[in-house]
Image (cartoon, rainbow, N blue to C red; front, side):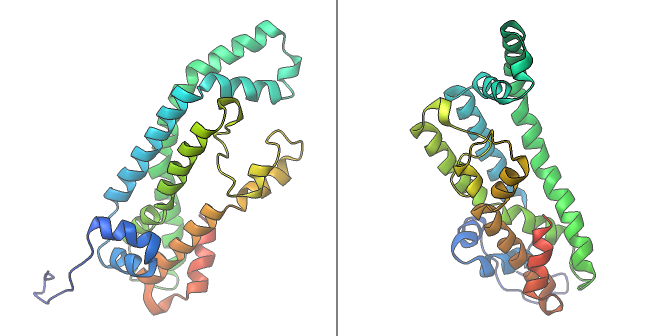
Length: 229
């Protein structure tokens, strides 16, 4: 490859080696992402994986079951008559299939917002970092979600549909071991936040930001920035 000035540049990694590298050689993978920031492949993979996940959930578990559980566990649900409760269940079940569309649309939007926040933070240390680099880092740092979705699908088919919780499908955080309907909402939320996959992605974001900013940004600084997203 040559740049616009005619100088030689080292050949970059392909998309598949990049994705595999996120799991096994993340530092090398994100150095390549910083040199050649692309985001379409990981973004599409994540969207497709989630689309498959929601489609399988709809067939195997069903949105009606989710809505029914939520209404029965809520304080408001206990105040409804059986007829009112059933009416709310049916309304929620009809709206359930629309939820994946909103969630999938929120994925790239979330990356854009986090990317803008991270760029503003990193720019204080390194003026050479671009939004395209940061957005590419956000997309590639989400690659572990592919593993998360794959494991969640396996668990979904191993468990009884009544026992599968789409809000917290894997025991990757203490919250998965707690009653989701616990009265201590703060404690449950805190337990959910202590998630292995979330920590993994924060570390990957830090590696990507460090690779993009170079020596002007310490890994600790990049790690602290990654915590915000």
